Amino acid sequence: MRPTKQVALDLGAKYLYDEWGRINLHADKLKIGDVVVVETLPTNGQIDTRLVPVVKTSRTAIFAFLKHCDLDFDGVEVGEIIEEMLDLAKRYIVRLDETRQFEPIEGLMDYNAVIDFLDANMAGVRVTLTLKELEGGCV
Image (tube, rainbow, N blue to C red; front, side):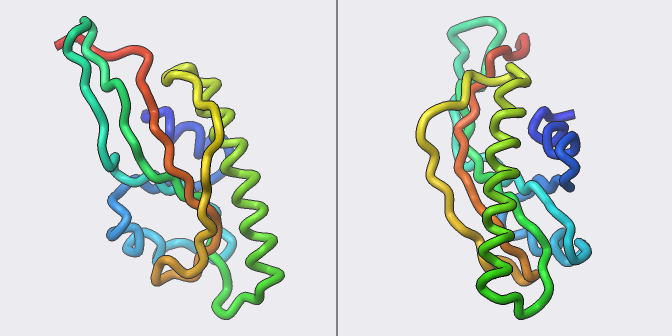
């Protein structure tokens, strides 16, 4: 199982892996109150063939931490949800780092609030992570 998925499940969240445009198809099946970690397909990356085992030196993907909300939620409620999802994002990043599958995840990270980005009523935060594998596979 992908370490990115395992960490999400360990934190009690659902996990979706797809390209951003198709997340709506999955989001429609979520129930009100469901929390989900969305990992988009990598937007770019690198492969290093100079070493054996060959490693994906980096891959960049967007991770979204979202909660399915009632229709017409108010500003106070969405603010609380964004804070809750920001806390989940921080815990997720720390736990992902603890897997030791990737180079340390550190430094400043920008995040964006997500409010009604999808057809489903969801709120949360979005973070772009560049993950660099520590171990690759033999080719």
